[in-house]
Length: 218
Picture (cartoon, one colour):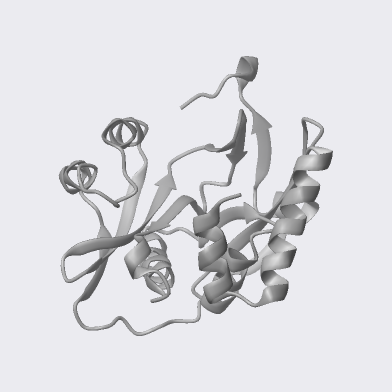
């Protein structure tokens, strides 16, 4: 059990949400079933929040990412940063008084989900693969600020919105996404090693695929 997550969950969530979280996880592990929700936020659905003074949202340059990888608590690893940059991923961050407090990674193509499973998505959308907020800045809605600003940048590039995929049992992320204006498009799943995608997800070009030869590829 992740004690750190449990403490944070008890602090920021209702008891029912915490119980549901661990119940879903138990079912997943017991029956070898993973269920995910596809979330989509667009300019027409986003619930905007004002950006506080001293806060700036922008793409994080490669040089800044390399510097951040050496900072304790940044959630970044130097080797991983180089690998992600080489694969064409982009990082969009929220800076608070110059500190990279929260960020999102965006994939240019099919993105790793779990094990040897990848998410394939329509390039008409941007895909947010991973999000992180420094522990000392959590609870300040920085993730929402980051995503709404990233949406503006990708919309300017001609994208229709931002897609993300989260575990169906992750009530904390789902609740935060709802407050931002993310719409629950549909479900994806891994059942006994087989992948499936709901029709609603397929309508936005989303599907799961297994990497060739059962190996993770980047």
